[in-house]
Length: 275
Image 1: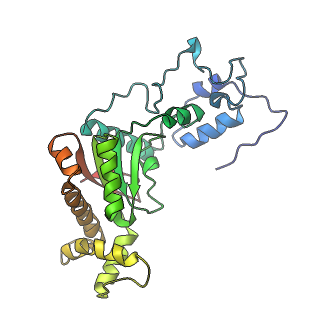
Image 2 (image 1 turned 180 degrees about the vertical axis):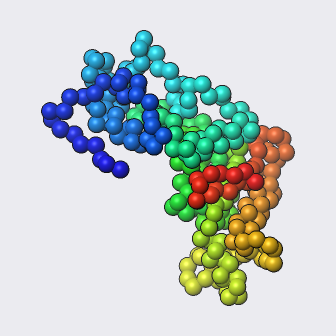
Image 3 (image 1 turned 90 degrees about the vertical axis):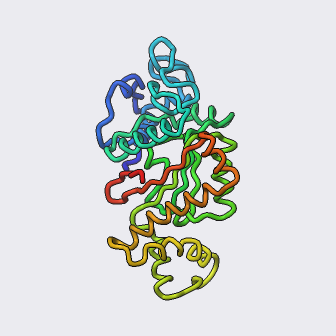
């Protein structure tokens, strides 16, 4: 991405012109924010707007901001109260991500200050540590929207499970998603270890990951299709099964207060497919 440059003699472009120009299909929200900064950083309150509007004041005509107070979702978005609504919002965000039509989410100073006072995320997501699967970007969500927990191959331990319990019980997210992904390196390494009949890896705690993920690998042995892909889907199902045994998550699901969903992210297309 070309970095915006700042010069003493540059004349700031009014933010109203930036907002009146629609984003192209290939323009990301980060490019939009970079452009806004280069144009004078009016929306962040760092400098006064070129039309004389004071810093931190509303940038829309009439002095009324069309965005929901403290929120980064589109102003027409329906408030999330159920797991189905939360899932619909995630999938809508993923569709924007795939089409390179990300929302102009508020990730500036005002939003950062707003969420610093409290958080109200609408979904909890367990994903892999894989650098190619950044959860907020995949679902086109901003500051304060998601509780994200990541571990290699979505492996569960006390810390990971406790973090997920915190998301659904303390932050009251009505949705918990376990997101596996295409060509997962952790499960691929586990397949190799199982084939070599290794009980542990060479050093450190990687052996724990192998032991945790091995049941999914063994479950799909001899099944038709791609072995790694089968293991990834089996692992998501196993993780969901373990989470339902949690004394915190299980009762919340049975009471209809949280919905558990498995999903699969395609590295090749960017799509999230619900199991």
